[in-house]
Amino acid sequence: MRHQLRLWFLALQFFTRLPTPGWVGFDAAWQRQAMRYFPAVGWVVAALAIGVYALAAQLWPQPIAVLAATAAGILLTGAIHEDGMADACDGFGAGGGAGRILGIMRDSHIGVFGVLGVGLTLALKCAALMALPGHTVWAALLLGHPWSRLACLPLVRALPYARTEGKAAALVSQKIGRRDCAIGLLTVLPAPLALGIGGWLPWSGMVFGMLLACGSTWLLARLFMRRIGGYTGDCLGAVQQVAEIMLYLGLAAALPF
Image (cartoon, rainbow, N blue to C red; front, side, top):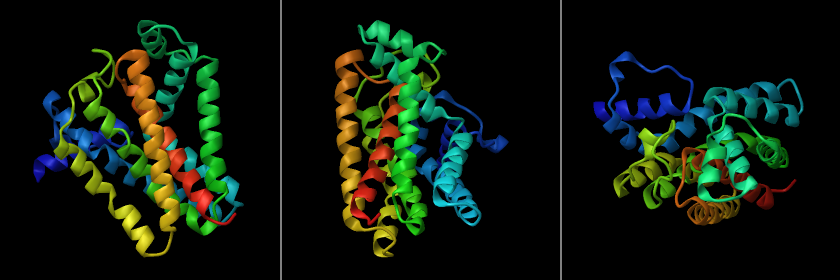
């Protein structure tokens, strides 16, 4: 149990700006195992986003509250997923061979494709949340943040890592096992079950959103394999962002405006 708690803190440390206890320590072998708790980090991000949304909604209209909640999530994660989305858009948008795409994604400068990609990502995400009834936004956030991170685990399990260096290399350069994927699923499964049973979100909307998220993940995985022969940390960021949008769009399609 202590080791599992250590892995949880390692995942939290990697994907957010939150400090972790000193006893956690560090070992390169633990980092791959910590990926099993990547989806569970979404619970923490969702909790902050929901809290900010609830407070902001008491003072301002829903669009402002949604923007404030989105900004809070970005601050907590250090924009790690948005940065990955920007780099992926720059690399794949510019085109060329695998070497050129990987080189562009490694570049710290952002290009026009990255700006457009992040801008449209944030616009679609916020627009989908704004289209939901105000009293369901918190439930959408509780569903979207953990489950969109779960979408990354199939890539880490099934695809090869496309490079040997970079911030994510030590964490995901080795494939995770079925047990890791199962733990990741179990950590986020309570969200749709509780929201559906409690009547906070319609089952049809959640299922539709999950299907859209799965479909987008599959298409992106095919793109990554065809163009660079695998995935990178930036690719995982792009998958998380797209999956989150698809979950919200699925809900928006099923709920009255």
